[in-house]
Length: 186
Image 1 (cartoon, rainbow, N blue to C red):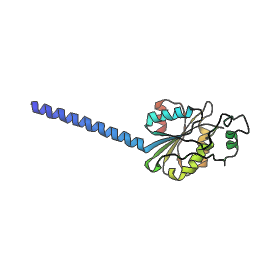
Image 2: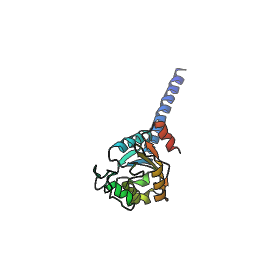
Image 3: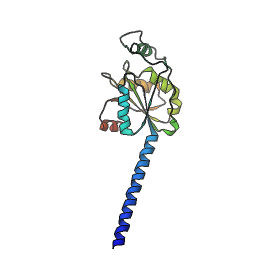
Image 4: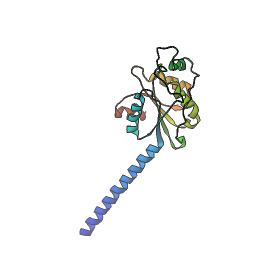
């Protein structure tokens, strides 16, 4: 009887150990299958990207324009500001620094940005133009930060501008973890 108890105890320990290893491996595989690519100017979108990373376990990659945006560049009330000019001339594409990601290893891409002029900044369009071929078979979840503007207008401009990409309905952050999980399951 004593031997049987020891065998059962050892079996339980092995089962729990294997279960933990399988869960850890599954979590690591999930981390490899998604990535967060985000552009932030004031830091709000970086905080939002961290929220998404907490829920998904995804690696975060910051998009950096070759020429950083100054405060004057994002002064939307100035008709000559960089963000206003990029809004008025949708063909403008500010250069971005290359990002270090093998999109072949990714199934899902979360793309974060601040809302400028009710839409995604031109930097995001540069990213989608530059990496669009690599993103064709990926599911793309856009998310934004904004004090007033909803995500809906950016959703429309992204889907219109990139009809060959699998862009899902976006989410404005910050949001509760449950809301982020629900958004991802859409």
